[in-house]
View 1 (cartoon, helix red, strand yellow):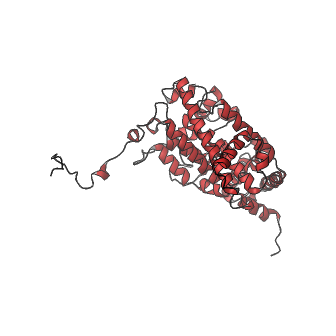
View 2 (cartoon, helix red, strand yellow):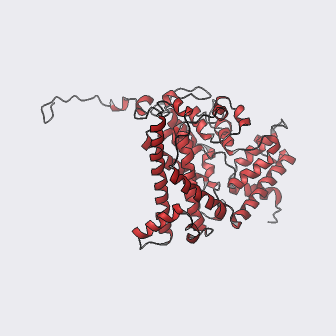
View 3 (spheres, rainbow, N blue to C red):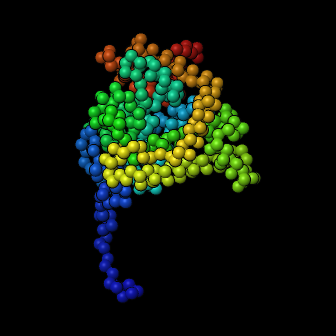
Length: 400
């Protein structure tokens, strides 16, 4: 058979297209030399057969999305406790926003989108109920037992606490994904983590992908906290006028769309701020890549931090962050809820410490020295509403 030009056309046998197997190298051939590659991963804690039809980092992303801890993020707070309203961000919506921002940046820098998405989706898996107030309270409770760091808790979730697979505890993620999850770590804890903790001791950097997820986290929470703060009435447009990053885009939005107001005007302003931060991050990082010229992932690790904003935008973003700290995170209504959260977390910890028999059997330890950490795992895994109900079950006598 010939086509209109007279060339002979050869037909593939039926089903031939479905027989094509894309290798990890093929799927990642477009990546820059400094990007992380699944085919060059430092591997998993437990050896597994290579996945088919997806890369190792895609497998990590999929395992995170299907984990119990990821589903629980829907009912874990950012700033506003879950019962305060259905329209405020949760840890789940925050993680999705971080992943969206991070993937956009990764695509423009030709680095591994699947790895950056996996890190973004997993970075808050170990967060306690009630946001930072819950974390601080649990850290105080655990002060004599090694403390509590939510990044380390996220690592514990993916390494040990999830129970889905017959061959191992945890999700058995790749080294590069686990490295990216561990955004902060004390030197004392780093010494106990072996290869995963070396960069904290030696002053080296994580992958470009981990650096992107880190900055995307800050872009996401600063801007959605502005949005939620305005929605709640704890912040006002008049207050935000002192923030250059906000005011520049707010006035531009009003000039371009004089007919809009209220929530629509706020959203138009916030999306412009996010776009400015993303574009600046891409451009400034490209300049750093040109400056340091890393030709491998190892070169990225040896270089100074590469993913960063320009100096001008970094100053504006820092001013927005300081504004939120003063006016939102320290607002008396937020502080009242934070105080309640600390009481709940501390009350639960003390009750379980005084009598571990109050714990579900799977969290009761025969080793008294291990019991506090097991209690911390139980509390950290709670959603806001579950922690409130558990507190009520332990301390409130119901006459009904």
